Length: 232
Ligand code: URA
Image (tube, rainbow, N blue to C red; front, side):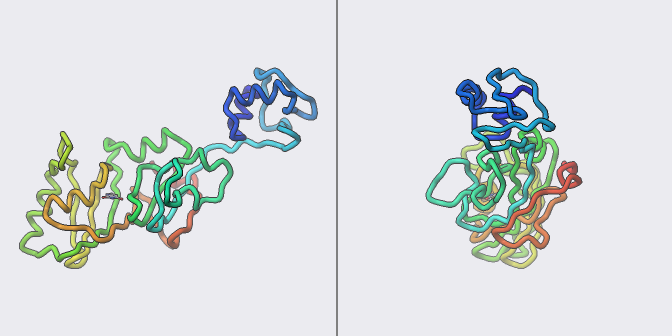
């Protein structure tokens, strides 16, 4: 790999800032100052920037049990960001795989692998996301069959041109539903229940495809295993 790319993949420097740092004589390979950005290096070489040894970070895959009051965004806002709960180097590279609303709790995946993220979120892959939905009022048995059918057929939500993809609804308690979606539109769960006259008071994502939170407590995170990454 070229030395400027090695720097940009192991530090916050962009390729052009990496070249400038090299030009200033700040970068060494095996103790020798190198100014040519095209110099080939690999992980067996000791690359330093201002004397600090660098290592390639590689691609990371993380699951987080998101608490309420945390935002799935890269920019800084009033709320803490999901990435602020993770302790890994070069956090700004991690992006959430889809989003949960600030008041929604549950499973969020984060990665710096854009292709993997696309595989998880692409509706074509039919990767089911299971939500536990708490409603303000009970969904009566008399209305349940109609709700199941409407969600299974797809609803045209306000402002959308295409109906929602078929979704699976089941009731766990009169005010607690389990909804499985195979896509991710903005505020989709809340808007789908609003379309059948119900208000969502709490929303929690339990699983994405084969991954669920397991024992992970609210606010905790862990890296995925190779098998879990490969499952998508
Ligand atoms: N649907 C919503 O309405 N909110 C979420 O956070 C996720 C899905």
